[in-house]
Image (tube, rainbow, N blue to C red; front, side, top):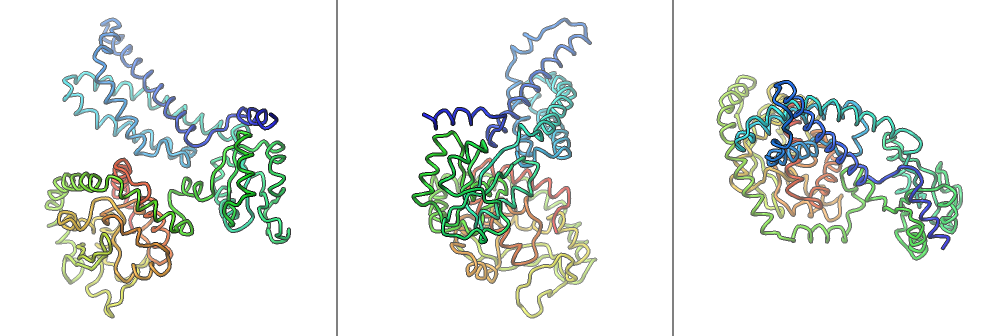
Length: 476
């Protein structure tokens, strides 16, 4: 009974909510403000034209509202407006709202003519003029109040080892998320106090029920290097009875960093990755192939238009061929030749040994540096996609030597080869070009995330973010 009462109290202490609930609040209020702006745009138009209020007449043709709201929400998601870890940045929030408004109108404009209701595009434009300041004001208010003590998210960390130190450091580095680490709970009663380093240890497992009541913690982070044993399981059951949320350290790490830590890759993880890929496997491959072909129909004409200009620039900049090919590992490790525009001096690898491209590599030509920044050097790989060696979205194909090196360092590395390599991928929109084995390991964590969470929506998101990377010249 005491645990039940404590659970009720914990559920109603302050205004804290996990990421999913915070995201839902943002979506609901954004949509509400957009709806108000749409109604206001109708009233404003009727007032200016002295045509009398005819909201009902417009709403009777409700079908134009569905694509408009859908476009706004879809682009908001693609533009990371509902990404909680970055939703506390004022600069990113304002710029993303402006970008979302502009893109939403551009996308909706041709749809309004298809719906035989071009007048709705004017209403959409007016509603944007109202909605953008309204949503911006609400989001800035949200950022302001989120910093208040009442909105801090209090957590206890079970563990004092490597995992516990790692997640504590990560939460400290992301102060804008308002995680308040109350302290660490020792999971090993045999460990001497001096073995915990500079961590704040406030008790052990038998003290956990008391600590939850005293600290009024909202969540328990399980970061024990020992895994879940009988003692920890019993404590977790007690936490659940008291209404305290629980999360494993790797799950929180993945949620915050959007990548899978290498030490989380074990036989169980690999099995679930294979299982997720096997579900509707043929249908998934078929859908991805259709999307690839459709995108190629748009991409090849673009390649045909800029090919002469790029070829001339490459030839004038340095002697050597315009294109070059290189052996890469495809799906299931099958080797194939990848095609690229040449961005380095001819015969850059004179000894024939593969080398990582450095940040200010002297082998990279002037034109090549621009091509890499804009990711235009990858365009000839449209041929690889047409041939079926690659897909538009997927982990970047690596050279066999690098694959063999990573196989030795990373257990179950071959799960990365479950899918076709891609022209762009999850790692490419979250990480820089990469010029070392350490960079390759970080990008590998993003690749594992993609393989485990693949969906058509994720592919669409990557495609959208890739366009932003190209226009911002965020390549090497």
